[in-house]
Length: 347
Image (cartoon, rainbow, N blue to C red):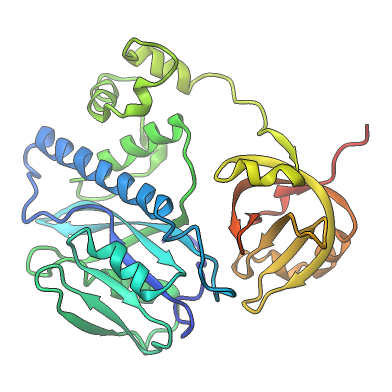
């Protein structure tokens, strides 16, 4: 699995839910590529809809806790299951923060097994069955790392009488994707599905007949909304993918951040306060005491150890680049890499 450190899923105070975004089927037509691809396309749409619903309903974007242990957020979990000697792709979610009741209400609507960790649970998490709502416990007290916990917990989400070993591949925070990202993401996972071994994204070619068929199969609404009334041709999509890079994100002032929620922008402002929350995240406050915008350096990013560099940002006018989210009902941005913070060039 790729290197990644999410919020501490072993922390007794952290509340989270884990659920697959793909519906679970009793069988898969692994000997019929066309039917398998159509089934994957339908499952892909279901996964995408769940992701959007998690944000739209406020499960991961709002908070009624005056001081949450972990900011509400959603992480995508990509992995695969062994099925009759082949790999079946699965894409799920870890939903952090909020209350156990709100997380359970959200996951319950999808009628599939899910895992819920409540505030105070230390050595176990709860597994809820989609068949009768039965609750069982999964012991994780003997595991030391988040990846071990995730592997054991997620492996309970599908029946072992049908599926074999579960292998997690990547875990990453979900972000808004461009149309180019959507196409490559769909093609990559579609081609991995039903194979004996997973193949990497670098081996995916989009300039052949197979890619033309697969993009047509995707038939995503976003491909129909490209500023024209005509359906896009493969040549048009290929031209879009191979076009010149887009210009840098819009530059705004910190006072305007609330107008750009869920958008990737560059925010300019003065860091007037630097503090650390109880979880260990470093908070760069802009234009205090109003706290109109906060840049958050998560404890798991590794940047928090660069204290000298962080201290040097105090009273500096900087530009931060990334996706604007919400932290304590105020606009905020996660800083995962050092190059997300730059000093503006002299005029």
